[in-house]
Length: 177
Image (cartoon, rainbow, N blue to C red; front, side, top):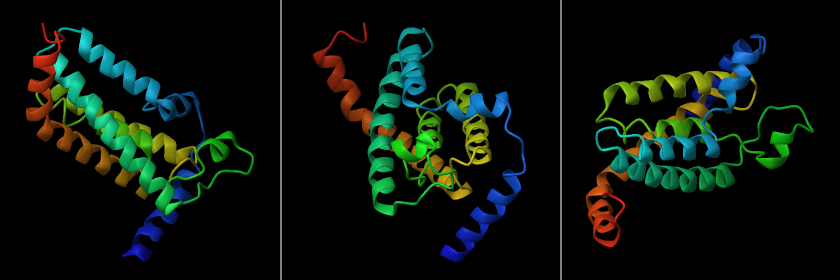
């Protein structure tokens, strides 16, 4: 199984390395960082959509779960990026597996499922961002694929446990008024 995953990574890396970097790829490769994620959560919290505050809180818990899982896996698997030596990302975050950007975007898909168009937007955005991060050499295919799966799992877990923490937050705070 590992050989097949490695072959998929090598095949996609060779194909995608031929695509020229451009402004579109550069911009989309940055979407999904922590600043973007917190901005999205704040927008959900303050923009009046159906269940907007619940979506923001569930997304926040999804982000927390996702960040913990990705951090543990990055420092357990320790898969090196295929970047040139000296590139700042190899110093700040030298490990590629799993993709945190893909995971964070995937972590919004499930919490926003009550508003299907927004959920679909996050799904499409996750695919575009994953593609752009592979083109730039930040990740292999499987880094993005498993990062996205971790995001979905985080979103699902945050949604499942929301029956516990949403009522608890309502009782201790005026946040839902």
